[in-house]
Length: 355
Image 1: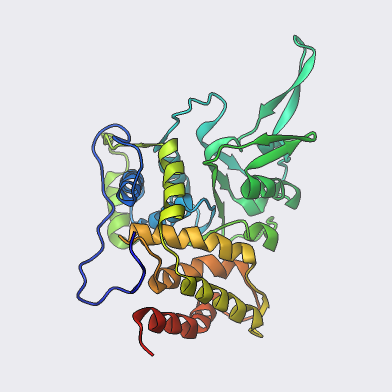
Image 2 (image 1 turned 30 degrees about the horizontal axis):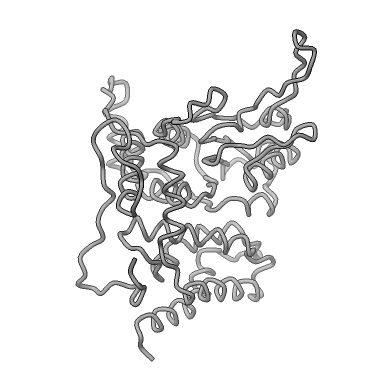
């Protein structure tokens, strides 16, 4: 473990190591160090990039959220590859516990007539045993894609709150635990507001990141057209186990150093946002708590075992923007960048040891 004396590398420093790819079926060894975390992330990244073109930035942030034990809200255009992205992640994780009633990936299409029991599960009367048994809903999965989350009623939206915050569901006064890996990718359409129910702040606050998936670049779009309809030989890319991901989460949280000055900077940014007259509702303490493992994970993926000011600058827009309620006409990314300038500059001076 290194001491974070200089979180910002000098200009002539070598680039951080890229995510490592592995050959072979699944994990060749248990996760015991940060190099192993990068290797696991590399396998997931390679499999996702093999299925989704032109989304490297989104893939990195999804991996950060996965290892930080958070959830992701994707605001995207129809046909932008969100289902393929979620499927490629879910099918990259091997169920080493062999749960028959927990899927690696499930997709739920939210509609206005959906009921909470349609996603959490329902009690079924077993005539043979003359008793009620619980039939699990699609929430019981490792990776769950919630499609068009804002197209169903608030009653159904609220059914996700307990699952996302506490990894459990309560049906008929009985609590059922979800798997420790449980990870939600939810989508909403930014263009079509007809028949939608805006997500309340309490729900938005459960999402670690809100990511905007814009159209892919020209070269990637041309490659999609060239390969469409052509049978693709599936690449034998290695997968990871459920235990790998859970071990990575714990190792990152226990190993990566977060200097107290980084924590102070994070709190200062949050307090400045809350005090700004353009902000009607600022970020919550829950947001700051969730930010720590996300910053730690990004540091690992960039080849460090300590969090730097650069990590905070990278993640702040996707951490804070969806949690702010702003006055009309205020643009969240510009406001966040403006508010962060002084605290981040002060952090950089302190960690570099300059007056």
